[in-house]
Image 1: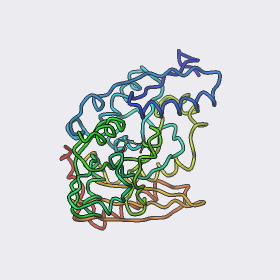
Image 2: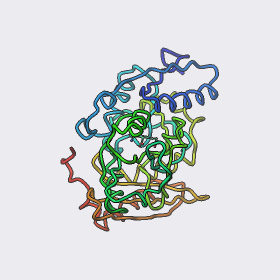
Image 3: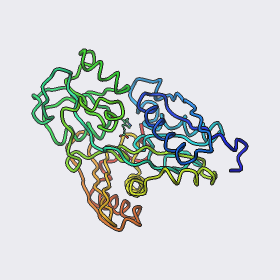
Image 4: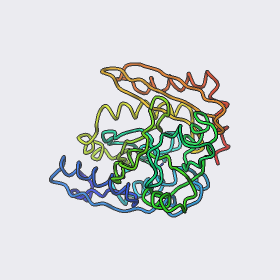
Amino acid sequence: MSSPSATTVRVATRTSPMAMWQTRKCVGLLRAAHPHLTFETVPITSLGDRYHGPLADIGGKGAFVRALDQALTTGQVELSISCAKDLPSPHDRMPGVVIGGVLERDDARDALILPSGTPPTALGTLPPGSRIGTSAPRRTAQLRQLYTGFDAVPVRGNLNTRLTKLDDGSLGVDALLVAYAGMLRLDVADRAAEILDPTVWLPATGAGIVVVEHRSNDTAMHDLLAPVTHPATATALAAERATLATLHGNCTTAASVHALLHAATVTVHAAVFAPDGTRTVRARTTGPAEHPESVGREAAERLLKDGAAQLLPAPGRQS
Ligand SMILES: NCc1[nH]cc(CCC(=O)O)c1CC(=O)O
């Protein structure tokens, strides 16, 4: 490598317990692949971590990533680690930053959590009027579309805090809907009352995938990340992000995209939901795994042809 710090690679990370778990895993893989290099973790607290109101107030999910992007573009670090799910749609990304490493996908499904001591009950059998805590527009819309009589209640904060508050009643909800991957990472998978079927309740774009980014002109970092990339996951993510990019989705978009690989083909399941759950447009496309972007784009084009544009936020109306 020709950078001034030839043997030390600085890695930006968010500081939540889940982010720190992801960083430990990723840096462990990097150290194993490059035993002669030193990897130094640089904690970054973003506005998204400090602000506890609705994410849309501070520019959506991008709030978490912006601080990491800045650490890269200002030369404070060489790499940054994120959940693929938290990355804004490709057209909303900061120029000069690219995904270079894609770790093997963990479980992509969402799960239901009930207060401790409650007998396991599936989402569909909770009593009418149950208050279900979630903040993702995708989850709120699916909850309204697939079930009737539930009240979707916005909740945020890291998973451990939400669990404690669910159990002591201070969250004011009867159940939580969260990512199962996050539960596995924080060692609370035994709290899942139901793991939702991913072909019915669609996971988020990039769910369960940890990515490593670098400056787009930093070829040394591009090469360094090759051994930690899981090729099948990278293919799935490329397809999912191509769908999202073609939809021009943003933080207020209730859309889900999930790609599955079978031998040499990739299948993209995609859906756009009306925020109130009254309408859903779904599409499924299959094509060669060597061209994940075109399979992803085709899924989006079918969604748009079937009227998804009316459900998406109008351009310039991002809130
Ligand atoms: N929305 C925040 C977020 N971003 C990534 C994960 C979990 C891990 C993942 O899916 O990669 C979570 C928590 C959740 O949605 O419950």
